[in-house]
Image 1 (cartoon, rainbow, N blue to C red):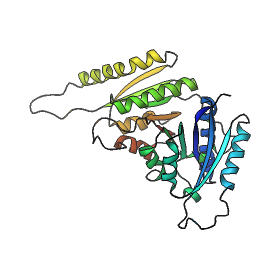
Image 2 (image 1 turned 30 degrees about the horizontal axis):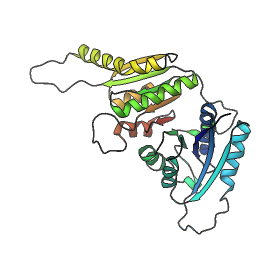
Image 3 (image 1 turned 30 degrees about the vertical axis):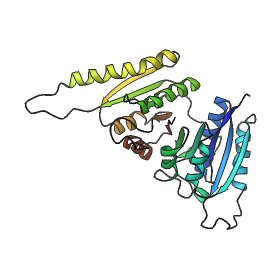
Image 4 (image 1 turned 120 degrees about the horizontal axis):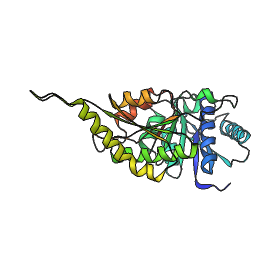
Length: 281
């Protein structure tokens, strides 16, 4: 297997959820020909306080990863400090960072709003947050293989990064793609009725134009453009209910230009049941 210099990094803490995240990371690394780096960051008040499981957690996860995929190249990394800060730093030279949405032990604060949220906002590579990752802690439960991937497309430059990554993921997995564009009724002007049919047609045409270059680049990916009259987060959560994963850019249209993570991405990260892949440059 030819490996990419940039590894897939997975954060572990010994919990079932972190082992589920390892299985997703193993799958990503194998499909893209990359090595896997298992990272255990120990958040202790005193950097010199002894930790009995200092190396065992990462080593155990690495052994399991090799058992699942014997041909995979796996390394381990154990550090003390802030899990979010360490993983953000490691992400600068990674292809992908994978974490469970919740954890215990070394990642006792690993839930959206802390480590996962900070990675989504500041990582130097895409971040996969695996919700309810304990579902896949053991090899007896297969990872999803045939469900579609859902991507949010609102026409912004940030969303386009997500669309590109979603097409690449769909092609590598051989699954269809559902591209969602939400639209809402504009504010009423005095004495003027809103033409909702025209609003829907405008959204449809804009989505088709946004997808056109990526459909040409990835002709083998089946694509379902879906325009929905709804709030963006609600539309994505509904479409992603039975999806393999939801892919988003770090932020979309609206809001402040200096925000690292948009409100829609935060809401989807908070409430999705499927894994969420946040694209970053």
